[in-house]
Image 1: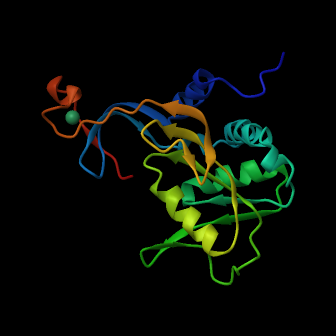
Image 2: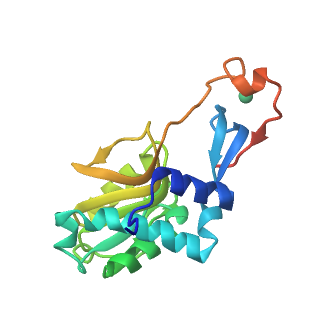
Length: 202
Ligand SMILES: [Zn+2]
């Protein structure tokens, strides 16, 4: 039987192969140390890989009655630039009618000008990775301010420290990742082992 939704292991293999999942010793912008790092656009730079991942995520959405019953009058929404290829892939797989992406403008997450109240279909919010969930939460507020309802939410990778649902909608993901962060150099196993750290930008 064809595996319609690849296992977490299969998805992790894809992320490793494309360089999107990296192991080593990383210092994040907030100063925390970690033995892992995701640079998701590296997986989405390959068209075939991007399609496999987006189609897999779309299948999880299609299983939800509230989504399948409203297609194609659905909007797929990305909270960030990293989520744009995911949004296009999921939109394509679901044949949803609209696509939007938010950008940070003057400190606020916004859509482009002239997106009006009442024009946005019921929404599925998708991102490449959900770390804290803040981007998703801000996007929910943005969507609600335009009078639209959230019917789905998901990402390729969800850190298990992120919320499991938003607006009573469960967050779908292909990988639920068990994150490891060290608050300080002293607590970091890689620091103790003398592994050279790399500073990451996001
Ligand atoms: Zn360290």
